[in-house]
Image (tube, rainbow, N blue to C red; front, side, top):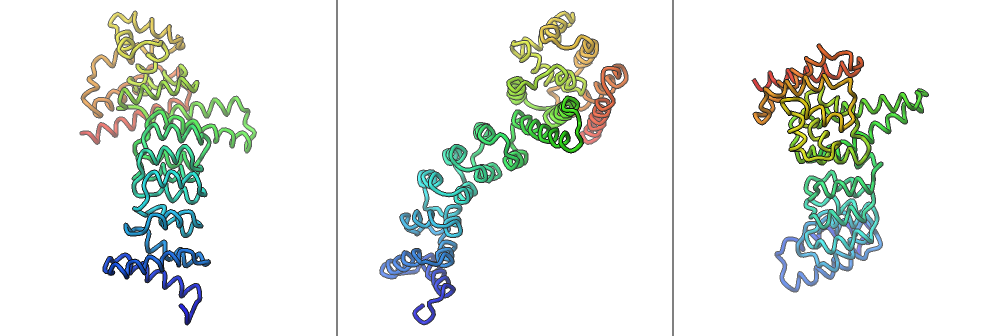
Length: 362
């Protein structure tokens, strides 16, 4: 370094010293000397020198915590390798750091191989949007429905967050519904602006698109707790309307229909089922009227509920697929006048998917 004090030489020296330090083959005196050299290089005016040091020491358990904390507040190129990989930081260290550094630093923390619940909560509460997007895409992060909901509440219009959540394998149905609503609203605004479509027409078209997509994504086989969360969230957002409920039943989604009527009527799911499946049909008529659903569709509802009495839905996907196929066939044959051509095409596609599911099961 005395012979050639260029930044490249200093960076190369930093890397070599760090490599030797990691090997643990040094005597106590050599280790002390190496630490002194590392501390000196960590103050080098050239970022490339400090970056070379950080890259080599990012996975070292021996790096002094005080030095690591100082380097973690350096420029992103220096800090990011340590923030994302260093094992010397505790959760408390990282939580303190993320509140004092830039969004790029926060994104490095969010991308760690393992992110605890406490750290995830702190990132969602304090980090900038890009870091929260990284967190939601990190499969090593402890992110559950609670964290997803908080992230969506804080950044409700974030396309990046929506993309990350849409790809999450454990996305609850109610959040999927919120993402679908965001997409359809954005698309509606784009269509109105580009093609001068009347807002009322665009809103109606997008509502139908959103509801059909929602039912396609969240329909058959969803567990009751997930459906309960979904319908509560839909009602809270003003999206649990009569046509969505009837469209679900026409597509063979009896579980969603039952849960939705329970929510609209303000009664338990068990009581709603007793009324819906009352052999005398008086219970069905009573809850249907209480939910203020269109009377024109009541005969269709009766027919679908009658058809359901011969099915054991606990038997699995094959039984549900058979029910969907029979319901959609009946609706298309006997109740076509209730649905416009777009809805009929959706029902036809749903029937085809049910038939394919039965073939796969067989």
